[in-house]
Length: 71
Image (cartoon, rainbow, N blue to C red):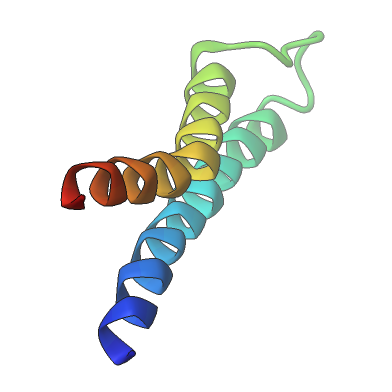
C-alpha cells in the first residue's frame, strides 16, 4: 500500500516542482523587463512555459508508461 502511494506521490511532486520553477522563470523575467517596451514573449518566458507544461503532463505520462510495461 505504501509502495503504491509513493509511486503516485513522487512523480506528482516532481511535476509540481517543475511547474513552480517554470512559473518563477517566467514571472522573474517579465518582472525584470517591466520598464521596457512590451516584452512579454522572450526565450525565457517560452522556456518557463515549456517547463510548466512538462511539469503538468510528465507525471501522468510517467505513471501510464510504468503501469503499461508492468503488465
